[in-house]
Image (cartoon, rainbow over all chains, first blue to last red; front, side, top):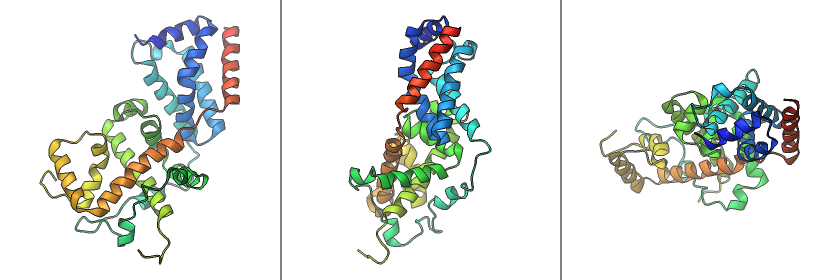
Length: 202
Length: 82
């Protein structure tokens, strides 16, 4: 049995000492997933509350069937995606625009300086600067919700494809395909951002 | 695609599995051969990898301390009420 389930049982029995370790272990993870998907602190806070309330209420929905971590990721992901419903903006065009395009022979389309652009050795301070963070943040905002959810579960939380698939209730194949497309879209935005100025030919 | 010559499109399609080390040995060999001769795909792989870690770094937000306090209080109140 998942040792954390013992903590949940104690929490339900009214033992406040069980609260701290559960919060330590799960509150930040839930918040990160919730914020990553909803992109709103207020929504993320409500998701965290929902998840912990559900933890009190619904023993039967996870006990003995899955590890607490898996269950929590699933509840958090669902709650966050639900909050996004009806809030989609004009954004989903961006993904197709941002995927690489290819010539008939299978080579990437685009001029030479573009297909050779390699900004991966940009110094960490610049990659994590306020400006670059804002670029990444806007690109994350623009991803369709289900793509962003996969990216958050895999690349932020570090879940495996199988764990992310369980959290999303989807197939591993679909998780992998969306993850790849989401990363490609972000890569494209970053490559445009770091691209050498037009006309400055090397 | 299991033949030795991959196009850039094939190569890029394999990158996620390659980084997860979930590709079979034949495809790994074919991809690495492609990368030896293809600077654009090397640039793509490098920036793809950096994108992945950067997304992780930017996404690792902490729950604000004040929110954590509110949550703890909410849950403690609930414990007291239960």
